[in-house]
Length: 382
Ligand code: SOE
Image: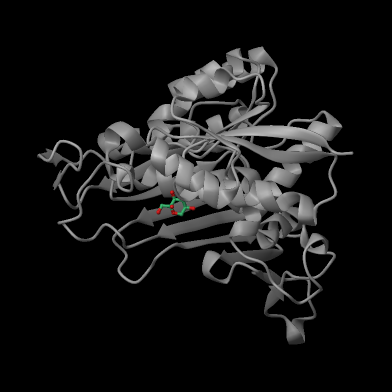
């Protein structure tokens, strides 16, 4: 008999769907001691929450997250609501002794994130942030190759996350689908939304950041606000490019924009080391491009590894070798790892404390965008 893991999810947007799907599927593909139970979905609009519950199989509905947190029949609070709600919910959930999963970015800024990390540590509750791209099998394989020392000393880490969905000046800011454009709700623009992914992966693969220098731009200065109906100043960064020094001496080069016409979600990274290089592209997510300088000189070249074999990370749990998986599966992997962590009594990365490191980098990037100077990155020493 599996043990129930009774989940209360807050938010039914895009992330509410990815998380619900992961909770539903994980037991079909991973042998675990716990079974996620879709106990309650919570959102302010009760009718919409009810419709979402019917569609995804949530057993009950709440319209006030405080009631959800107070319920004795909930073991885990999953925060899938907009960024400005994360801290208050997480602090209350930690106090109530609930396990917590939180959508990325952890918080509006590092000061808020630090409070959240301290709260879960004080309460001793398992916690994790949904930086899902770590669990694309090709990205996890990159981590494995780097940890085995195959690249040798790392010189360069380069990443981009390009989109094009906010180019129209007629697009309003704020409200249900457009809160990512409202700085009061999102905290920042592409830095917290997209570069946060690149930074999380980079810290995981290449270690911490020492300092950064950034340029940020807001191309459309004013937009109508969906909730007030008024034209208001836009406070988010529409685009951000930054350079960095990593603590291991390598150089970082990062770019993100929502104004790269033709690109919908082009997340790519390339890492160059003394013995080899790796390249990965979200639009071709099941492949890892590998260059190994130790290969025979006559046939040395970039290899495109189709990361679908049973030896590859996570793949033995899915279909037969050669058949690929996609975006949604990264969330399933994250739930599987979290549950494995519960069984082993071990924290599963990225914990709130790990995700706080990304907040420190984002804060330094945004500060540098304003100051025009190199800014040191706070957080963990070493
Ligand atoms: C923004 O469009 C967004 O949905 C991000 O919020 C997600 O984190 C990213 O994975 C895809 O793009």
